[in-house]
Length: 261
Length: 286
Image: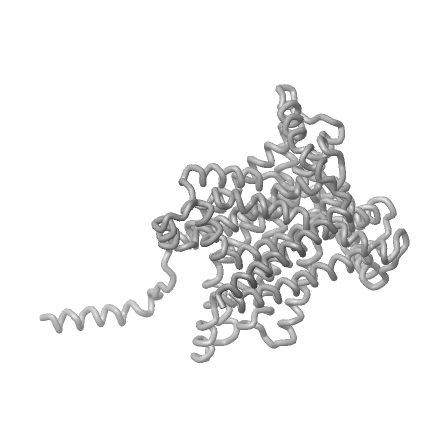
């Protein structure tokens, strides 16, 4: 019995490794990935970065412009997240199993959120580029749709977790639907929701860089401009400002999370 | 005397009832911070709307145009610059990129995750690795890819290596947290019986957190699929994302974007369904 168990276990892990190896081989072939080149390029990239990818004295003169576009990107990400969150709150209340009005609206609002969530922000950016052009609004709406989809799912889970018993208890006392929502469901899930919103802001700032690259606005565009014109010293300054901004926002949201949760 | 005093306070209560409301919510530090956070978020949002670079855009018109575009996109998708088989092939290329990234990321992350777990190594090593990981996460993926593209050239190599950075940082965090959940007694018992470091790792630490590790890795694979699409578009990594970028920026063909979006949606939803089923199965077995 014992020997059988170990033999079976070994067979299982061997089979798993074989399948994994086969998929890896297939993936390498189909993507035309070059393993040797991959390993080779790592040290090359490091030496290149040490040699070229740092800001110099004269690149500092571009700092005000860079900070300006960084600020624009930060504001776009925050605005998209908060507006997305308020829409997500409505859809989450409609979609959660404990608070929904009826099953029909519940599945509709969750379905809408699924579609919005599964189309990536980069895809949204390219779709919106047609009608909004190279303005901040392209990035804003792309981030808004992405945040809305993600936050709806997160909020539904938060509501389900935080308010199973209390909703039933309040319903038993004869409280109306709206007083249940506003007196019990929302207050008890606010801390967790804020935590999700802060997480979304962090994610959105990173995505905003990518969207800026694709649509020509904000900090992503600034980076691309200097990167494409081979001004690597200024491009590295852009990267450093992004790192500082993200670490700063992360530390704020970590502090808020520690206090409220 | 005592009875008298109580009567007095009772009367006072009755009198004050009509003027003062009973305080239900108390003002704790947490509620203050929540309010300040909300206030700043709303304030920054309002500032943002005034500061947007509108570029003389008619918002109403653009909204209507977007709705018309979306209608064309989702209701009249067509193939023009590529065929169904080509699109399917590109989807597999994107999946391949995501898979390679996840695999490399997972292998590196297991080792770094072991070093980052406080109960397996010292606090200092753990702090160094966690700091490095936070730094890696602070640089957006697309910038990693573009930085590597300088050394390796635009293509799948730069994309996979650049994307691996974020996968590593994400998975190190997830893995090390699940390693840290392991009961201290198990490690102590194995140490007392004379097991060495690697025996403890492979016989106790990894088996006990394998379920978590698999579900986190699969979640990262789903994320990597979305990232691979974006990298195909932004960094020329190939795959369905690149086709989408071409359709959007060069052919200006909204209907073709619709086709590609349907492909992406189908794969993303399939992955999600598969992940849910897979997790249920893991839970039953574990």
